[in-house]
Amino acid sequence: MSTELIAPPTEGAGFRIEFSSDRRADIEAKHGRLASLLRETGRDGLLLLDPENVTWLTAGATPRGHIDPTTMPAVFCTLEGRWLIASNVDSQRFFEEELDGQGFQLKEWPWHWGREQFLADLLANRKTLCDRLPPVEGDMVDCSFRLARMRRNLSPYEQACLQALGAIVSHALEAACRTMRKGETEREVAGQLAHRLLHRGVQPVHLGVAADGRSRLYRRFGFTSTPIEQYAVLTTTARKYGLHVTASRTVCFGTPPEELVREQSAVVRVSASYLASTWPDALPREILTAGKRIYLLSGYEHDWLLAPQGFVTGRQPVELGFTPFTDDLLEPGWAVTWNASAGAALSCDTFLVTESGPKPVTPPEYWPVKRIRIQGADCIRPDLLVR
Image (cartoon, rainbow, N blue to C red; front, side):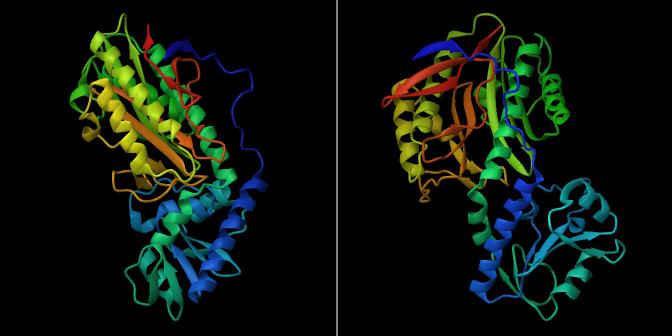
C-alpha cells in the first residue's frame, strides 16, 4: 500500500450534459418500459406520485418550492401519452424550467381545488397502476416494487448525469478541506460545503462535519458548534438531475494522531476490498463477509457492526441497503456507495457497477491517495490530507 497524490484534472476535464435529445430519448425509453408494464397487467394508465418516480420518468425534472407534499407535481401515463399533473401555481414554471420539449402534456388543477379531488376525477372508471395509492376511490393496483427495481438500473444518460454530479461533489468536499481554517466550527465548515454545492446547482441532502474524533463516538453525524482544532471528517449526500451521490474526505492540521492513522489505514483497506468486489453478479453479503475479515485483520473486528457498510443509490439516497442477508446480485448500471468506518476514520465514495469493473463516480480530484493492489488490480482510495 503506497501513498501518492492525484494530480489536478486537465483543462476541460469532467462531464457535460449538453443535448436535450439525449434526455428525450431517455424519457421515451422509460415510457416504453411503462407501456409494456401496462400491457402486461391489463391496466389503462399509470399514476406516479412519489417524487423519485417522477424524476426518474422525466429524467431529472425536480419539484422545488413545495412545503406541502399534497401539492407536488405528479405524472400520468397511458400507452400513447404522458401528462404532467400540476397546480396552476407550478405548471408554467415546471414546463419552462424542467420539461420543455420532452413530450409531456399538461393536466392542471386549480390550487384551491386540491389535488385529491382532481385525482378522483382523473382515475374514475379507469383501471390504474400507482406507485402510491392516493386517498381516492377507484380500481388501483400498487406497482411501487416493480418501479423501484426499474429505477436501480441507471440508463447511459443517467450514468453521465451521475458522474457529472460526482465530480462536483468531490471538488466541493476537497475544496472545503483545503480552505477551512483551524478553529472554525463544524457549522461554519458545513456552510462552506453547502455553498460550494449550491453554487453549482447541487442540493445538499445531508452534510456531516465531525471535529477531532466526534466521528469515533457518532458514526452517523451532522454538525455542531464544536471548533475544529486537529482534524475533521467531512461527508455529504447531494442531489442534482434527480440523482444522489455520497462521499467523504478527511483533513488534518499538522501531523495526524497515530490512532487516526491506524484507523484510516483500516478503512482504506476495507473500502478497497469492497471496491475490488464491485462487479456484476457479486453478492453483497459475500462482499461484506470479505470486508469483515479485513476489519478483523486490521484490529477493528467489531466496527462493521457500528454503521451500515454500503447501499445502492440513485433516485433515492438509498435505493437498497446492504446487510448480511441481502440476496440481490449487483447488476450493471447500479450506483453503489461503500461506507467503511473504524474509530474516527471514514472512507466513503460512490461507484458505478459496469461489465468492466467498478467505475468511480466521486474520484479524488487533487488529493493524497492510497493505491492498494488486490487480486492483481489497483484500488485507489482517498487518504488523509495533511495541511
